Each structure stands twice: as C-alpha cells, then as structure tokens.
Length: 160
Image (cartoon, rainbow, N blue to C red):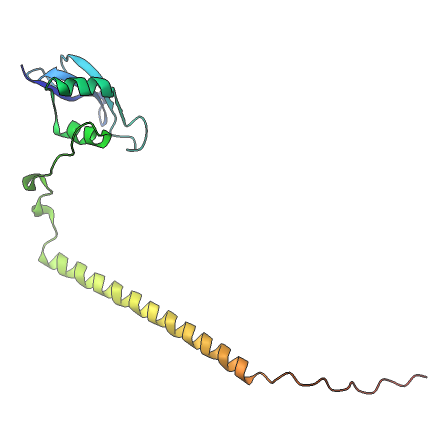
C-alpha cells in the first residue's frame, strides 16, 4: 500500500478549500483518508495565517514513514522547510506556445526603445534645465553690485 499526502477538495463551486490528508493512493480524491494533517486555502493571501495550516509534527512523522506528498504539497511544505524545494524540470515550465510571436516581439522591442529614448530625453532636458538654472544663478551673483558704503542720508528736514 503506497501512502500519499494530498489535498482533498472541499468548499463550494469556484471557492476551493482543501484538507491536507494522508490517504491510500488508490482511494478517491475526496473519499476515505487515514488522517487529516491540516488545511490549505488558496484564495487568501500567501502571508495570511489562514492560507496554510499544518500540524508539522504529524507531517514529519508521515514523511518519516515514507508517505509521498503530491507536487503541490511538496512546494507548500518547502515554504515551511519540511522538504527540499523541488527542482523544476524543463518539461514542467511554461509552454512556449503562448509566448508572443515574432511581430509582437518586434513591437515590444520598438516600444521599449521608444520609452528608453523618451526617458533619456527627459533626463537630458532635466540636466540642461539644472545647468541653465545654475548658470543663471552664477550670472546673477556676478552682476550683483558690491555693497557700497552707505551714502549720507539727505539732509534732515529743518526743524521749525
């Protein structure tokens, strides 16, 4: 009898919720299981405490007994440090069929070049404006007359 650690689906339509269970590999997905180890809710954020709840001691015990986790649970357990992270095989990567075709890649490349040129032009204009402001400030300092001696005030009005 080979024992698997796998997900048993629960929840309603389009609202999945999974129990993490230990089951005989021949048992139905949502059917008979040996023990429940926790639960997994894929709809909440990964950093949320309700995303993945696992009894770590039970998982370690079952892994020690030779139970094999499914691919999804291997990745989840790797985030908890219970197993090594799986090595992604080349045939499991994203298919190349959905990649943009040649014309779309050319358009993306041209768009990236235009954006880079626009950004460079903005930076150049900004540098030129800063240099012009600096030159204007230096010119204003150079043209400013030296502080002259204070001229005697005009004669005070005669006292009557």
